[in-house]
Amino acid sequence: MTEKQIQNAILRAFGTRPDLRIWRANVGVARIGRRVVRFGVPGQADITGILPDGRRIEIEVKSPDGRQSEDQANFQRMIERFGGLYVLARSVDDVRTAIGSAIPNMEAN
Ligand SMILES: [Mg+2]
Image (cartoon, rainbow, N blue to C red; front, top):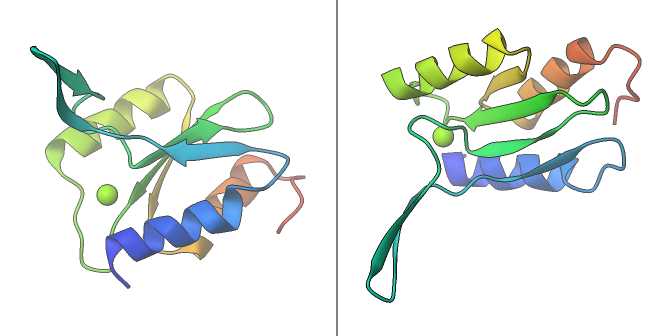
């Protein structure tokens, strides 16, 4: 699967659960009238959201041979330093496993 396909599978698998919220985090540049507007921060993950205990979740999606960039590794360190959950995911199962260990009594689904 491509990174995009994995990302869509993750959004489908977890996007409708009542016990957490995740959404795509857009990064890029757009021109609005005369203004150039930048979205996001360097290295931010592909998907962001919130866990039932209030912690932030960040999911960086990679294809099977994709590698995290230096900016992405720095973003991971920042999220973890503040107590957030960062997941480097190459499959839906990677996300399921990470959420399961972060929230032990959360219903596996
Ligand atoms: Mg990615």
